[in-house]
Amino acid sequence: MASRIDKLDYVILDQQLSRSFHDQLEQTLKPLEQRFSIFSLFKPEFRLLLNGYIYLHSLARDASSLGQKIYNLKTVSKLSASNGIMSKLQLYILGTSTVLIPYIRERFSRSKLLNNKLAYFLEDAFKIGELLNFLIFLQKGCYPHLMYRLLFLDCDLIEGKKRISLDSYYVNRNLMWTSISEILSYLIQIVDFNRIGLIIRQKVISKLTPSNLSSEKNRESRDYRICAICDEWPNNPHHIGCKHIFCYFCIHSDYMQYGGSAYSCPQCGHKISDVSHIKQLYMSWT
Ligand SMILES: [Zn+2]
Ligand SMILES: [Zn+2]
Image 1 (tube, helix red, strand yellow):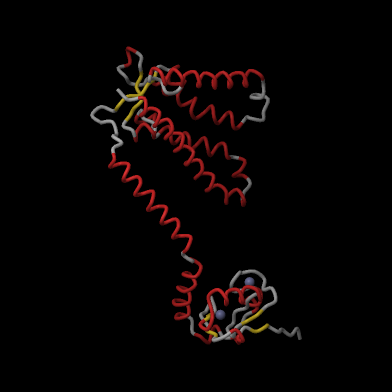
Image 2 (cartoon, rainbow, N blue to C red):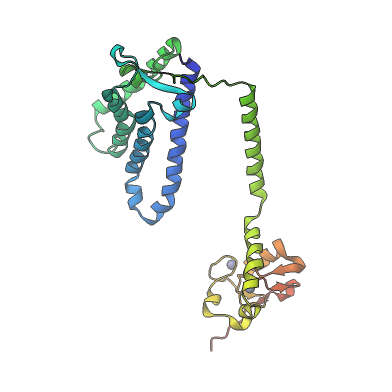
């Protein structure tokens, strides 16, 4: 018999897992939406696919939701003739209520189909039903969802598996991982990835390209159009003796941040010994 706490835990875990999957989906779609507006039009369909995939690979296949699996639980039918196995009808109704109905609600939220009194009434009634069901669940310890109660489904331990024990070993391990991840996230903020990339680029690329290629004489017309630090059109163009051009602000702030006496061009590694080598670029239009 699965305990009340396990059932409560799996319900919360299911909610959190689903939220983090949807956050991931949102992050993935964001750059695509900016380029192709079609992606934002079909957002509800992407959510439907994700929910459907999760449902097919958890409840429909193994009779356990993702949260239930972690707590060694599975969904069982309480109907007397079923031997604990969910019938196809129960699975279909459960799938419709967890995958299809949220999709219809999202897709047609602005249409007249769902903007009527009956739809609002049904939604409110379901919410009140969920609340009542939760209060009864706290007292009796079975049917953690309203849908489970309506379909005569409950959950139980998977045969041969034990209840996950939350002893001091687990708590310690959790504490350790949390502190390690905190230290790492703190360290990552300190590391200057731009600078590391720059040093690698200087070490590798400057060895590969002969130095005469990056000299002032080899400046091509596109070099005049791009600041070698911010990749934008150079604002008040300056140079340091190599073929690269910089904005006044970019080169001076880069010099102050990283340079001093050993400053080198972030693209080709051309070294300068002091600030007097940063010169304004004069161009003649004749
Ligand atoms: Zn710039
Ligand atoms: Zn350069």
